Length: 200
Image 1: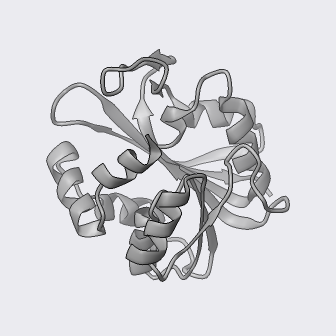
Image 2: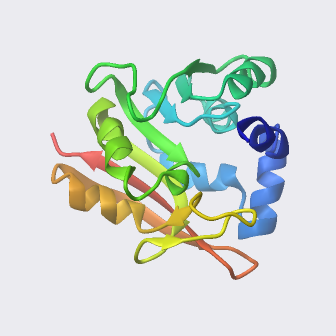
Image 3: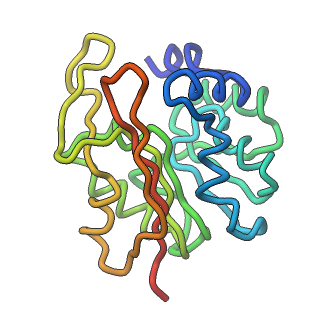
């Protein structure tokens, strides 16, 4: 299943932008600029669930250079090395990130938390919080409460909720920097982008 997911997803950031423009009436690049343009370009950044590294490539083209992704799927890692060789995607699980506490200035997911069961979500957001020195950034499907979504005709694979609020409610040291909801043009879902910062 992981290999099929990788193969059917966009292989370039240009393709990603075309899909986002169709689905949200705004490019992913524009979203990233709104949320991250003000941050120093020397931040070290970790993506949890990087797949082939396309989101990291977006950031590289914004001027960020210290970029690492963690991915569980071997095929996706090999494709990342082939398609986006200038970003670093390594083998690892979001449930047990292979890094010390506060190793990265910014830790993020994009369309990953929606695939984590509500029974397991606390484990992965705890790892993101643990490894982040300053920022947590995310882009995920939004719903006011946990809601299961049938994914490609199957159950128990996708959930949407207010992941921004989940982080804020779970970790008292986090504060909201910016949050925005993006309704999809098909009217079926809304996605949410959020940037959180740890209080010093």
